[in-house]
Length: 272
Length: 70
Image (cartoon, rainbow over all chains, first blue to last red; front, side, top):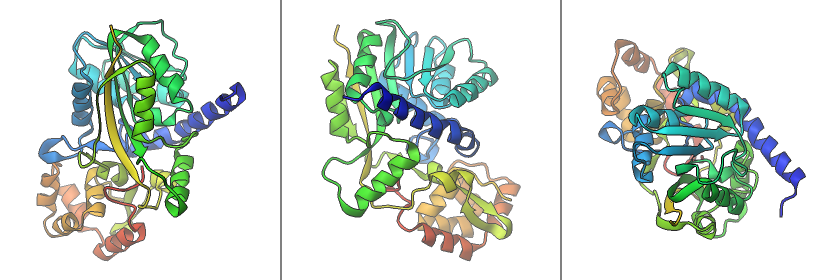
């Protein structure tokens, strides 16, 4: 059991990371704050909008749905989705006030502020009534949870009966990790404010099922996801044509390739 | 300072074959990723210091590619 002091410490840590990094992330990487993008753009490229709309398809989004985006970043997925589905309404929450400010600006620029609402909230304690949403998704965000049991119970609460849950994330691979890879994993978690350790897919899927959801699909995304855009966003070319890490890369680049990571997705339903 | 599209930089860092194509045929390599090959962009790539790029890639070690840390 985590006491309230610990919870506030963890909230503050995640908030601090994203308050600090979000303007730079937006400048260099764009409005979709995910490290791995499905290679579903033209010619198999990593196109953020195509990626977001493919996730919406996989999530089973239908026009007319009320969508909750938990851990929304600065709103790229929510805004891409709303622009493609004219009858979808989106509520989106993040623990970072800076992200909400940036997201509101982007929503206004795209003329979507009437259908997409960004709110500062802890996704373990959502400010919405029971049975409010048709679809709740977590796109590289559930990793930050310090209590996945509580997290998915809260998602279950705010979903309508028959509503859908979709989660796409970065995980540590199942199995024991020791030695240098473990130390490097801890380094990665520290950089990104992952306060309770990066979960494995089976841990997360277990938490989803444990909350009462019926899992319809759960699987790894090996080979489907690339990080070229994310890594490229960390680099700039200086005078003389010499590449260096830019301010974003200097903060977030983790110089290790031995961490056993994977991407995975899960689609589940709240029973009727 | 040249601001190259992140998907181009990332692909070039992770994929040695693509990096070669980028240096040898910038226009074709950009179009391969669906990026508009403007004169400025092609000029920017032609201005890259090839040795410095290879050195930078080497400095990243195995941290770039499909197993790169998030």
